[in-house]
Image (tube, rainbow, N blue to C red; front, top):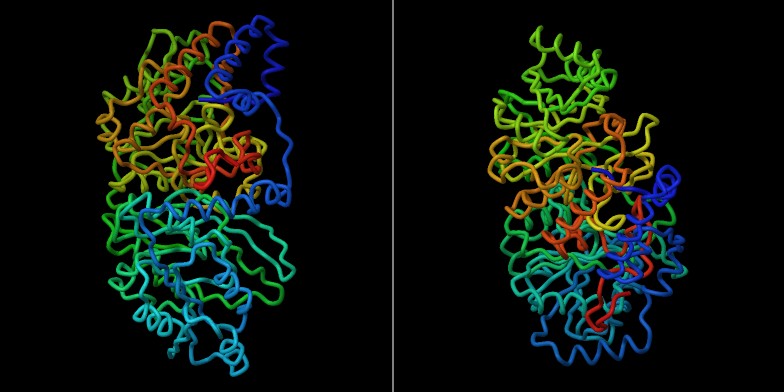
Length: 609
C-alpha cells in the first residue's frame, strides 16, 4: 500500500499524460467531499508556520472567546468541582502557578499547596503569602511529597483532582475539563496537550499527543503534567506512593489506567498546560532501578509475562518473552525479480534469530527463467513451499490463499522487496502479536539510504491514509514515535499477527486487490477491540514497490480510485479522525508539521481552528 507525494504526481504525468484525467477526477471527488481545503491537503504544499504564528492564530484566547466561554458555562448541565494540588519544591515558581489557577475562567475549584518536610523556610514563607486572601487556597504538610499529596486528597471536596507539576494552567483549562466531563459521563481520567513557557512568558516546544495509547504509556509518561482523575478513583488506588519517589505521577497513571476501560479515558487535544522550562540545572531524576521496579509491578498482572528494558533517553522498552516460541508462517508474494526475492529469503533464513519458521512463497505469474529456477531450488531443498497463483495480481487473495494452508500459530506477511536489518525483528514482532489484546504488529521500515519508509500509518495523512514520517531520518521522528506505541494501521509489507485473529476477521479483503487492504484489515481488527502495535525495535529495509512498480498506469489508476471509494464508503469519517495522530498536526506528508488551522474543535465555538 503506497501513497504519493505531490512530486510523484508531476513525475507520473510526464511519463503518461493520460493520467491527467485520473487526477482531475480525484480532485473533483476531494472537493465534493471536503472542499478546497481537502484538495490542498492532498495535492498542495502548505507552508509550515512557526509555533509563534500558530499560538497567535489558534492558541490565544481573544475577548470574544472569553465571553463565549462565560455564556457556555451558564448552560452546562453539570458543574464538577476540581481539587488541584501543587507540590512545593525548590524549582517551582509558586506565584505564577498559583496565579494561573486564580485566573481560571471556570470558578469551581480549590487549591492545596502540598508542602513536604524538606522544603526550605524561605519557600514556606513565600507559600504563606501566595495564597493569602483566597479561602479556596489551603496549605497541607507531610513527611514526603507523596504524604503531603495524600493529605490533600483526604481533605479534597472536589469530584475530580489533579496534581500539577511545575507549570501554569491555561485560563480555560478547567472549563475544557468540565465540558469534557459533562459530555462524557463516567470518564475518570482526562489529559491534555501541553507546551513549555519560560520566565519571560514565551511559549515553545509543544507536545501534541495521541489519544489513549497504553503501549506508549508503558514506555514513557506521555500523558504529561495535567492529568485530572476522579477523586474517588485516586483514593481507592491509595494516591501517591513513596516507593516511587519522583515517578509518583507516572505510577498513578499506570495503576489508574489498568483499573478502567478505554472509554473512561479522555484526551483533550488542546494546549491547556504550560510546563515551566528548566533554565538552570535540570531537576534530579529517579535512578533507573526505581522506574524498573515500578514497571515490573505494573506488568506483573498482565496476561503475558513482560519485562522492562532501558530504552533511549527517558523511555523504556517493554519485552514480552515467549517460551516455547510459536511456529511462524511467513507469506511472501513474488513476481519475477529474482535478485530481490533472493535477498529477502536469504535475510529471512540466515539473518533472523527465529528458528521456527515455515516460508510460503506465492508466485504470481512469474515467467523469468532465473526466478523460476530459484523457486524450484527453494522448493526442492525444503527451504520454502512455493504456491503457484496464475490469476491476475491480487495482494489480498494471494495472502489469503497461503494463510488458508499455513500451519503456524502466527502469520507474517512479508513483501519480497523487504530485507532484514535487526536479527531479532521477528522475535520482537511475534512477542507483541502473542499478546491477547493485540491484533497486528508493524515494524520500522527504512529505505536503503536509512530514511523512514514506514513508522505506522496515519489516517487522513496525504488525503486518505499515509505513512507517518516517510522520508525523515529516524532521529527526526517525534520522541513518542521512537517508542513502541499503538497506531491505527501498519503496512502489509511487514505485518505479523496471530493466525486465529487473521481468520476470525476473514483475512484481507479480496475487493481491495492492491491498495488499502492492510489498512482495512487493521481497522476491522480495531473494530473488534484489538490494539495495533508499531515497534521501532524490529527494523528492516523496504525497497518499496520494486517488484511491481507504482500504480501509475491508467488501468491501475482506475483500480486505485475504485479501492479508494470503497474505503471511503466503508469507513467514512473514521478515516478523517485518527486517534493516534493529533488533530493539531498537519495532514500533509510526512506529517508532524503544525496544522493551519487545527482540526480540533473548541466547545464554545462551532467551527475549527
